[in-house]
Amino acid sequence: MKLFSKFAKIMKINEIQDEIIEEFALFDNKNDTYNYIIELGKKLVFMPENYKIEQNLIKGCQSRVWLFPELHEDKIQFFADSDSTIVKGIISLLVRVLDQQYPADILTADLYFIDKIGLQSMLSMNRSNGLLAMIKQIKMYALAFESVQK
Amino acid sequence: MLNLSQIRNDFPILHQQIQGKPLIYFDNAATSQKPQAVIDVLNNYYQKINSNVHRGVHTLAERSTTAFEATREAVRKFVNAKTIEEIIYTKGTTEGINLVASSYGKKFLTKGDEIIISTMEHHSNIVPWQMLCEEKDLVLKVIPINDDGDLIWEEFEKLLSPKTKIVAVTHVSNALGTINPVKKITELAHQVGAVVLLDGAQASPHFEIDVQDLDCDFYVFSGHKIYAPTGIGILYGKKAILEQMPPYLGGGEMIKEVTFEKTTYNDLPFKFEAGTPNIADVVALKTAIDYIHSVGKTNIAQHEHNLLTFATDSLKTIKGLKIIGQAKNKASVISFIVDGAHHMDIGMMLDANGIAVRTGNHCTMPLMKRFGITGTARASFAMYNSIEEVEFFVKKLDEIVQQIR
Ligand SMILES: Cc1ncc(COP(=O)(O)O)c(C=O)c1O
Image 1 (tube, rainbow over the protein chains, first blue to last red):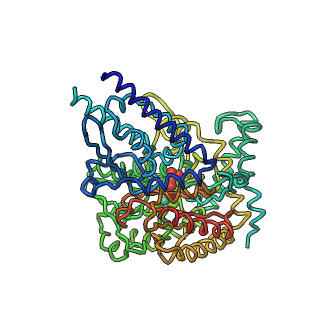
Image 2 (cartoon, each protein chain N blue to C red):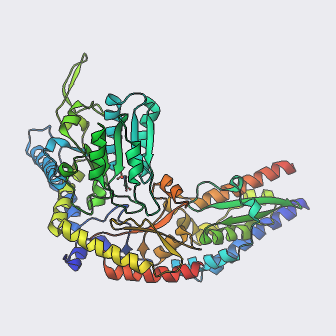
Image 3 (cartoon, helix red, strand yellow):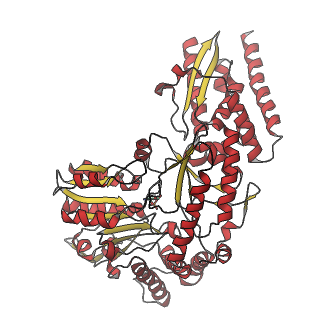
């Protein structure tokens, strides 16, 4: 039973990724891509102000990014925010893929959508490499929750 | 007046599309583009001249040495130094400052001595002095600036004392564009017996430099910001001071005689040029300087001033936009922030429209802190930029800001 649900979850992560890849296939230039991401960013769920503290800040981004996870019924819920709207949009994509998933699934997730929609090249600009730092942080939280669950 | 279409033709990189839009390159304060003549000289050097300098008796060695030393004379004229011995080749501004901090600092500074820099320094003109302070127990003092981005003169005067041994300030701020009154700074620093290093990285591309008139003891700049290749820079130092300074690196070229008991050092400028130098880029530096002269520094300064004035006036029409750095005397650098639009978003959206600007802290984190911001977007102009480009940039920026908000 447990095994089955785990498998189902991995499918789900990939399903969402495929969905995103399809959405982004509509855009053939950076301007439209960014505009879409900006719209996503504006819709990112509000992060409570008291979560925006130094401790939740991710190092290594040109913009400031806050990330905070909570465990609900064995699944992780992410709260995130940034002072950059584009970064917010990118976070909202990560959250869409990884929110409400089991820690083990997050840990093993292969986030191929990032390459496919060209996010990597966008955020490795200016040595900031914020995207990598964000993913690393998400996986660290997943690892921490998983070891607690065990 | 300069012939803009002629100049633009000389820079092949400008004629390309970025994201399907014509490239508009406004990141000149980071590095400038290279004219065809400079690119050709590099090619020609490796195809016809390449040989090590100062060492061979063969024809190629003579040719490369002649070309290598011809640049030194061109640089001497470029900054109006007295002699070619005062012109030292470096990798760039950063290395020049490190050389002075290490060599001069090692020999002449002792515990309790003071070094003065300013709030608007590039990290390159902060960190080498901090390292020296740590090593020798010195005190680093910082000239504050006002909200316009000008040095606060009275505060500078207060910082000066007989303990001041080095004053190191930038001629032009890379983040604000402020042109500092460096001649007056030098005069005052000399009155207390301090030596003065001027960071000319941002001044050298824009207007005439006259180190004798400024009377500074050191002047440093980078080739890549004056239309020459990367990896070559200049340290000007007064001969009498350079002569007293110990070498910075040891090796070939910088020696006169080596025995295992004792080595005697070569004369200036070679004493500071250990190892095989960056010959090709040195040779191309002369071509870049010749190119600047062929356009005329006064013409360049006038043209860039027009671009700056036009950009400043146009940007002010964008609601919520604030220019960071409003000094009366500015070089063609314009930094700004916009309410509700992060500078990185602005930079990325401009790039999506073919426009290259710099975003971030511009290697001036203490300066950003002074303004209470994390960074700015910065447009910086060179001789090949046009009013039409500025117009397009401002129009696009206005649209982008609406989208981001
Ligand atoms: C004012 C200033 N100083 C120093 C530097 C460092 O120059 P480089 O990286 O060529 O050594 C720069 C370059 O950005 C600069 O703008």
